[in-house]
Every structure is written in structure tokens, then in C-alpha cells.
Length: 510
Image (tube, rainbow, N blue to C red; front, side, top):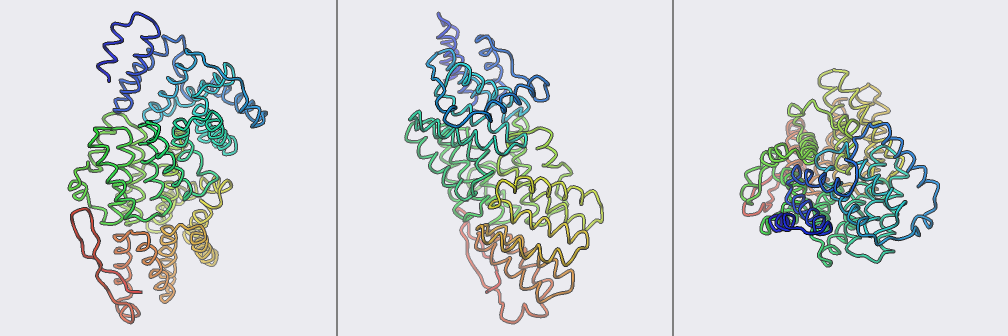
């Protein structure tokens, strides 16, 4: 595609032919993850259309323009926005398409310029007329607004995007909008479990309409949402591996790195943290290779995603020494990337890790980091109790334990377990049971500690995180082998298939 586009570009006899060739070049480069080169062509394209180069966040005029647009949107009803005049102007449509490509490029490479192109798309929709790209404009502007902390307007823009796409009767467009709204906006108000279902729908719609880009991205997000919401890890591993092999067979790079992050985490949770060899057996790249590729290509979002994946894995396997001093929360606050649900949950695990290290080291800096994570998660819990109530309660329990407020901590642990169970987060229920068990063990309440740790193993096994369950089993054996663990709780063997290999594991029999 790129060679043909280059040939057309060099022989173009009209401005329209030249612009079409440039757009095709930009999109094909983006799809192959040649983002730096895609940006060069996109900027040239933008100049041809008489537009200014995208501004960086922090620009006073840009901040003022965004605030003005938020006021404009807030002052209008849904119906008045959905019924704005429509436009079929070719130049306007070309500019909107280009801004949409910029959005994908900048979210991967330079989130500081996302707000500029997203704002421009909304300005064009309001000032020049609604086009088929306006639903994406609304969704992408919502992502920027939400990243700035405004949940109400951000989520409303996402809802308007979906309504407008349906009003325009464009199934292909709906798939694209879902790929933006569900991972970056929907978690503010909708259960993570339903987001998984929405991505499946978006994948199907995209495939039916021939929208390879949106269909692929929706399935990558589907796999990740299923993992983050506590879905069956064996299903996550199987589906993400199948999907990655399919992408590789088609030599398709778009969506590959996102799906790889999910696959690697699912493999680690099932087989153990040092399981890159299994990835090699699947003919897929290891985490080390993916991270090196992301750094080389300056794919900031993917690099950050891998850092988040490592933090979650390191916490679940208690590998505190491998935790980087870099803060996920600091990155989110400073760079303001699109707030994917993965990153929000990453902050939750950063908070848990910080409190655990604070108790081990007696270093107040870790308590401060834990408190910052708690404040951040509390902010979003006001929008979605379903997704965040149990997380806030567990962080409050860990804070109280760290600060010596033991009665308060005990109540928070109990409430966090109840909330996780009520909201169907089996994996986080397992985390709460384990941390509660460690709390009781520290206080010398061995019977209660043993009970909580057994419940933790049960939850992790139900989730499919057999390697994590193994770790907790070892903890139980180390602390209770001389007492209750030997009476009525014996080890049994269980086989679990990992592609072409089979491993033997041992678990407590309930």
C-alpha cells in the first residue's frame, strides 16, 4: 500500500489525488506501527490543508480553548448536539480523517498533543457541520476531558458519540467509536464486565463491515477487559494467543502489541512469573522483546502498558525488589495519556505495593505513595462504586494497617471482601482475602489468618491464576504446616495445559 501511495503521490496531477495518496500513506504507516514516519507525512498533509501544527498540552491558549468548548457542550442539550447541521464537504471530511489518524499516532507516541487534535475535530463538527467522523471527534474529545479529571463531561461525550453513530446508521463507525469509548471512557460509569461484552460486539461489527483496524483493536481490548474484570484466565490466554497467531499470519501489526501485553500477563498468572519460554513455544515475542521494540519505536503508550503489566505481576507474586521506583500515578498526572482502565487498575496495585513496602521498610515515602494512589482511586469511585468501591476499601484497610489502626483495618478488610464478591471481582476478592490473612497473621490470630488464606487460594484458583494460588499455598505451608494445615487439608495434583506443555501443580483441597 505504501509503495502504491508513494507512486500516486509522485504522479498526482490534482490536489485531491495528492491528498488522498497522502492520507493512504499516513494510515498504512500507522497500521504497520511506523508511527514516526506516519507523523511526518501527517504534518505535511496538515500543512497542505492550511492547518496549524498540533499544539502541546500546557499551551495557555489551548487550555483556554478546551475550557470554552467544555462550557459550550455543557450548555447544550443532547438533542441540540445530535441535531447539528450535517456537512458533506470533502475537504472537511479529509481534515477530520487526518485528525483521527493523529489521535492514534499521538496516543501511542506523544499524549501531550492529543488534546489539540481532539479539540480541533470537535470545533470543526460544531462550526462546519456534522460529518461521518464527528462521533469519533466526540469520543476522542471525551477521552481528553476525562484525562483532565472531568468524569461527567468526558463520559457524556462518549455517550453522545455512540448515539450520533447510531443516528448516522453507520455500523462501521460504531465499531470505531466502541474501540475508543469502552476502554477509555465507559469504565467511569459502567461495570468492567459489560465493557468486555461491548468490545465483542464492536469486533463483530467491524469484521462484518470490513473495518480491520477497529475490529482488531476491539478484540485486543476484549481480551484485556476480560482479564481486568476477573474473567477466566484460561479463556483469556487461549483467545489472546489465537488472536496473536492470526495477526502474525496476516502480517498485521495493529493491535498486536496490546494483545501481547494481555497474553503475557495471563501466562504469568497461570504458569508463573518466569514463563517467557512458553511464549517462545507459541512463536510469539517475549515481554523483553516487546518492550525493546516499543522503546526503539518510541511507542510511549505500549511501554507504559508493559510497565503497568509488570507492576501487577510483581505484586501478585510479591516480587517487591523488582518494582521500579518510577510511579505509574506520576506518569498519569504529568503526561495525561488516555486513561485506559488498565492504568487505573495499575494505580490500585501501585497503592497496595506501596503500603506493603512501607510496612517492610518503615520508609514514609512508600506510605505517601500509597496515600496518593488511594486519593486517586477515591476520585474515580465517586463515578463508579461498582468498579472501585472494593479497591478503595482494600486500600483503606492497608493504610489503616500500615498506620497501626488495627480495629479500623479489620473492618475495612471485611468490607473490601464483601464488596469484591458483590461486584463479581473474584481476583480482587482473592487479593483481599490474602492481605486480610497476612494482617491476622501479623496480629497472632492464626486460625483467622489460616481461614482467610485458604479463601484466597480458592479465589485465585477460580480465576485460573494457578501460579498465584501456588504462591499462597507455599505461604500457608510455611506458616501452618505444624498445625491446622495437616488436618483435613491435603495437597492434590491438577494438570493444566499450556499450549503444548503440561505442568503438574499442587493445591489445598477444600
